[in-house]
Structures are given as C-alpha cells and as structure tokens.
Image 1 (cartoon, one colour):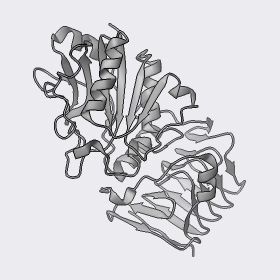
Image 2 (cartoon, rainbow, N blue to C red; image 1 turned 180 degrees about the vertical axis):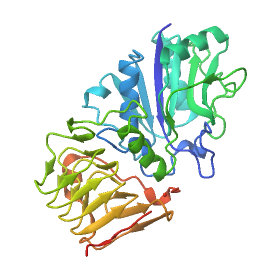
Image 3 (cartoon, rainbow, N blue to C red; image 1 turned 60 degrees about the vertical axis):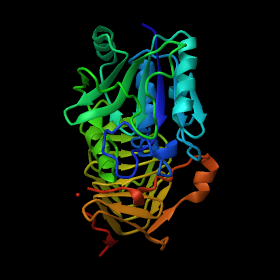
Length: 347
C-alpha cells in the first residue's frame, strides 16, 4: 500500500475540546503562530512530525497546509526536503484538492495529521489495522479520546466524498467502528503548560524526542554554537540551543531549555522554564516555572501572561529575528496555562 501524508497546521477553535478534529469557521487558526511551529529543543513539533514520517514511516510525499500569515517551516532544512508547503486559507476545498492530487499520483491511502497535537504512533501497525478494518477512514485515539490523526483510503474520483467540513467535523465517517488505539506518546499542545510538558518529557526520556546538538555531559545538551560563560552552571537535565548565550554566574536548571539566539544575563537563574527563540533576559533575575518569548512572560501557576516593557528585564531580539528571517511569535497570551513564577531582581 502506497501512503502519502497531509499535515494541516492549526489550533482547535475557541471553546473547542482538546482532540476535537476541527478548525474554526473559515479555517484560519486564531493564534498568530501555532504551538506546533514553535521550536523547542532545537526543532518544532511540525518538523519532528515530518521527520518521523520520512524516516520511520517511509512516507515520500508530504504536503503541509498552513493558514495565511504563518511561516512555520524552514524548507532548506534536511527534514523538510520533499515536503510541499501550501500557504493559503485552509479549508475543505483545498484539502480535497490536495487529496485528489495525491490519489492521482498513485497513493492508495493518505495519512492526515492536524497539528495541534504531537503524537508518536506505530505507523506500520496503524496501516495494518486500517487495512484489516475494511473501512475508508480510521481515526487514532488514545486513552483520553480522539487524536487528530486519520488514515484515509483515496481514489481520484472520490476525494470529495469523505464528509470533509472544516467548519465542523473534518471526516464524517471517522468515528464509526472501532478506533485505532495509540499506545505511544501524545501531547495535545493546547496550552503553555503542554509546551513545557513536552520539554520536560523529552529531557526525561518519556518520549522519543532527542534534543538537537551534543550531550556534553549526562543530561545536558548544547549546540556547538552556544556560548556558556565558564562561571555559569548548567544543571542536568537542560538544553542550550544554537547561538544562545548564558552569562557569567547564571544558572540553568530543572529541565529548562534556552532556545536559539536567546540570552541569559549574568547572575540570572532559569529554573523549570522554557525560554523561546530570540529572547533576552536581563541580569540578576530569577525565572521559575514560566514560558518566556520576547518581552512576554507566561507563568503557569498563576495562569497569566504579561508583557514587560522594561528591556532591563525582558527584550525581544528583533534585529536578530529579522536577520534570520524566522517568525517566532507564538501568541502565548491567548493560551490557557495550567503550575509558579518567581520573577524578581536578584538580592
């Protein structure tokens, strides 16, 4: 059986339940950049998903559909080679057209993944289950319910007959019959806490994600281009990404990750926190149980996001961002957060 893949980048609509296979009316994600596109431990969930499809599942033809205004991929990266990116309003008609193209190219079935969720599943087992079910559509479930992964039989003349409706249920026949139960790792990536959870689970070996760079000592991963002052302390497990800088006497500990082109000021402690790309944190501060992007800090225990305008505390390194041509804004202020922040000047 020849299987291709369609990956749709989007978030559940406002008020939508986690795992509900739908996009908001009009198909446009309500977030400026979906969490699946945010780099953690050196790669985004989208990039890791495409990479797994290429390497583990042997899927050769992958189409990534993204809403307008989002630049979630770096096509020059090796993991995106052979991957077609379609950036326009995502709707059922567009999905049907891509489905038909893949059927005409010889695909017998299409693996449809909507990100959202980061899911690790046994591709060969799913294909075998689907083939033996006799159904046109099989949806993946985990212990908590449906996951936004489907496998669909296709035929060039029937690609508009699956009840595709991006204003409601995407695949009308997906929930009939016995679902495929996934025993692998699932993170629905709907909150800032989910993003932190994915980092922690990866660093603790609870999923298959491996940090980019080298493991310079047990539990500490660093990119070769990272700069860590000789008096700074990196306590395992932790991650420091490419072109990131950790200043004198700084501390990075408890499953914290410092992503690419971010800077930690001298004497600052980062504890149980995620520092997203192109973020500069000032000197002699303490950041605990938080997700920080630019000048926006989301702390998890208090369920709030705040924009800090004083560059001595937080600052987005916008010049570097423009030079790299990357989009890293994630709109965390619109996310629900679910554990505490201690953000204060040093003694």
